[in-house]
Length: 246
Ligand SMILES: Cc1ncc(COP(=O)(O)O)c(C=O)c1O
Image 1: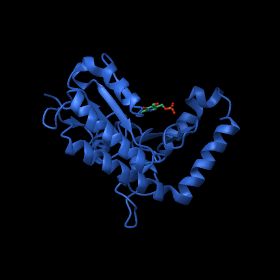
Image 2: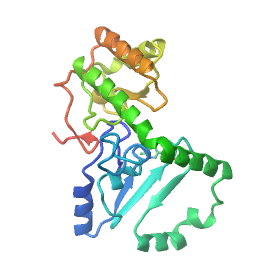
Image 3: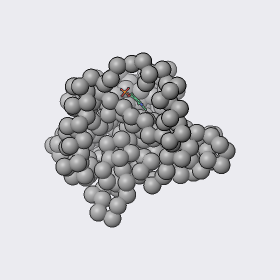
C-alpha cells in the first residue's frame, strides 16, 4: 500500500494495519514515495504536525519494522534518483542472496548519490524549517478550498490537494484555465480514475512562495465561478486513500 497517498494526500492507519499483519504472519509493504522527506517522527519540538526530520510514515507513527517493508523514494522530496528499503533483518539477509536486481545490477551512479547526499545535508540543516513553511502554505490552500465549499479528499493536511470536478468532461477546459492563470496541476482523467473522481491534483512545494499561493487561491476562486466542482458534502468519504465501500 501507499504511505502518503499520491492523490488524496492522506495516510493510512499504519499501526492498525501493521498489527493485523503481525497477528496473521503477513508482511506489510508500504511505499512511502510521497511521505519520505515530508512527514517524520513526532517530537515536542516539531515545527509542524508533519513531524520532524522527514523520516517517513513508519517513524511518524513510531512503528517498528517488524513484519513491515518500507520503500522510500528520493524522487519526490529530494528530487534525486535513489530509493531504499527498510526491512526486518531476516528479510534483508534473504534479499541479499535472492533479489536479482541487487545481485546483478550496477551500483547507483555517483551523480545520483551526490544529489541525494546534498539533499540529506539540506534536510539536516533546515529541513524542519522548510517543512514548517510547506505546512503553513498548504494550510492556507486547504482553508481557501474549504471556504469556497470545494470538496477535496485531503483530511490529513499534507501538500497534495486533489480536487474532483463536478463534470468529468470539463477536465481539458479546467486544465487550460488553470494553465492560463499560471497554475500547473496534475490531471486525473477517465479511465485512469472513475468518472466521479476525475479532477486535478495541486501540489504545493517548498519552492513555492506566498505570492504564488495567493495566485493559486485567486485562480481557484475564479474557477469555482466558471466550472461546477464537487461541493463539500458531495464527495465520497475516503479510507486509507481509497473510496470507502458503499
Ligand atoms: C507511490 C509511488 N511510488 C513510487 C513512485 C515512483 O518513484 P520513482 O520515480 O522513484 O521510481 C511513484 C511515482 O512516481 C509513486 O507515486
